[in-house]
Length: 328
Image (tube, rainbow, N blue to C red):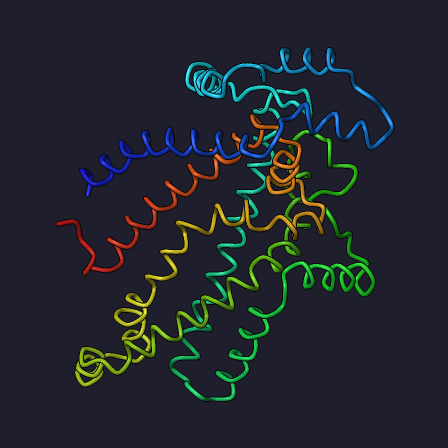
């Protein structure tokens, strides 16, 4: 297993180089560049930028260099100094813009993951063991509802209920007095007091999906001969379920680690905008629309790194949980 982990870590290096290059190329594929977008924005406000000013801006931002030169300058800055470049739109170092948002995004992602597992696992097991019971029908209806309702619509409904019925401060992850305050226990407490709403919204769809998967997997395992044999030997029903079929049925849960973290960063853009969350998704969308290539490229690179790390963690946990999965 140690050899496997070492190989995977080594393979991450060329993978990140390849992904960073592809991301850099894809970001520059749309016609024009940041200066073109900036001029178009000014033109919408009846402001005109002459060609000399546009040329000066491109020279200032290094956009007049060939794409390969721009990429190598960017990647060398990351490797040598940890410098992700300067955001064209914000005129700030990219690292200053992304780290706090990435930290808040990871807190939200891990909280959603814990909530999803804590709800989906016991409900999936119950629905399989009590198949076709009233509880099973109830939870089946919940899963259909969770899969069918768009997350942004659920966000609007819950925001209305929280604000009107309970007087809860909704929108964002902090109260106004803590938004620009330095980190403290009070700010962390304020963060967790606002975290429940986006966690519920983001967890509903994934929870509904995993309940169905867990139920189906448990129903596949329960009729198998090893379960019948364990029951015939007098093993208690709870211990039997926990020790054998549930451990095998956990595989889909563990596999979700590989895609859940990056998906919550890149796949929750609409929800983050509706709730005004200071996470990575809205800033990534804004950077892509403005063709702010260094800011967008940094986010894409970090998302890919999270995907690779999540895949490694998922593979290790699968090997530990399921004895059938071993490196030959």
